[in-house]
Image 1 (tube, helix red, strand yellow):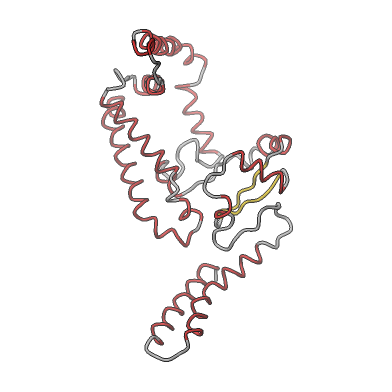
Image 2 (cartoon, rainbow, N blue to C red):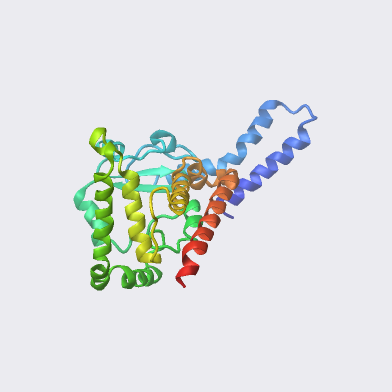
Amino acid sequence: MGLLKKTSLCTLATIAFISCTKNTHIPFSLQLCTLILPLFPLIIHFLSSTTNNNIPPGPKPLPLFGNWLQVGNDLNHRLLAAMSKTYGPVFLLKLGSKNLVVVSNPELANQVLHTQGVEFGSRPRNVVFDIFTGNGQDMVFTIYGEYWRKMRRIMTLPFFTNKVVHQYSDMWENEMDLVLDDLRNNVDVQKEGVVIRRRLQLMLYNIMYRMMFDAKFESQNDPLFIKATKFNSKRSRLAQSFDYNYGDFVPLLRPFLKGYLKKCRDLQSKRLAFFNSYYVEKRR
């Protein structure tokens, strides 16, 4: 019987015991013990899993949450570099039920990414990205293997061959020239400067949409451009949100994600409907 099943049975037994004794005079200390009892399988599993001498060193993890409460939700490069000075070039962080091995040495990183690249070629999946990628059907989060190679062949022919690069090079230059023309004609550039991030975003969207759908957005105020960027912004916020991370890494908390995951599914449905209505059907 698995660890989760054992813990669930202990929990059900505890609830039944407390329900039967709530009107009796059983000491509170005994009832408290029954509340702690379901956690014993988890604690024993945690203690046994942390005594493995074959795993890299790292900060001492806590039961259930691992190192999450110690490192927080922002694993930036400065924090990891500082931790490597304490634990060495290869160290382990436990984020809930998942292990994260950090490699900060260039030679060792070359072994991981190049020499042993096939073994480490797949990206870890999570429940939110499975919604946004159709259970890993894209190129980024799919498992490295035959499906990934098939997707690469499909993407290479229409987008990345020398013939395609030559075919679209004039269009790329045209889109860049339009950005420069807009800046030259904008009087605010001469006076106080402008933030061109939004204009560069329009340029990149037009390059991609012209290649994929033979369509473009007229300006930053184009209703379809506003709609497309809003979909992608919402998806990025949901995918990077702190709200779902605990539930994704700590399975016991996953039932609390139902409302959050519904938001993700609703957004994905609207996003796919948008592409189908305005671009995919017209392209066929």
